[in-house]
Length: 209
Image 1 (cartoon, rainbow, N blue to C red):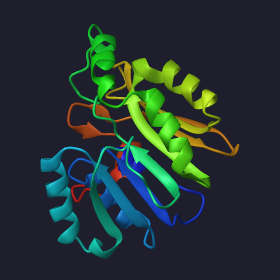
Image 2: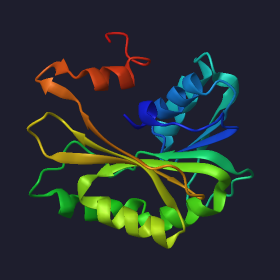
Image 3: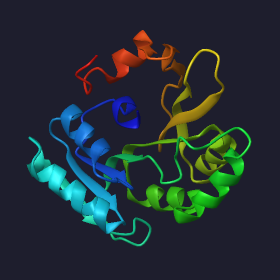
């Protein structure tokens, strides 16, 4: 979802995907932003190798680079116009009763405090930092953004259906203030029937839409 939702006001030169896994989000950015160079940082060796292979066989392999590294300690030799992350704690396993506990347990692998501090140092002056997190993290994310001098320019709350609670939130932050927009995205009208908004968001990447 983050890969489809990502955006910029103008064409980015460099994009960074943090915790890229097998590279799906990076591939989506390569498809969307035709001139951008994309770096995918992944600490887990198996996922890194899969991402590297996926990049090599894609039509955009010359603009995609997989990095097997710890994001927090790695030295990046450029500034990024777009930084994206779908953090490792993000999981469909969160329930209303256990969400906060699971979130706190899994956040230790990439603490938000460190994530924001590192990203602040490598993002370009015009850059955007965009991420998706469980809804229970909203207050913490907004507080850390303010602490690190990021400005919220877009937020999207996500519901599985019209009758389900908000479980995920997409954020976009920038170093400079921009026009703010707020959205609600409902994925399904009912089981197996996707909303028009969700199809419009993702149809570029899914053949069945």
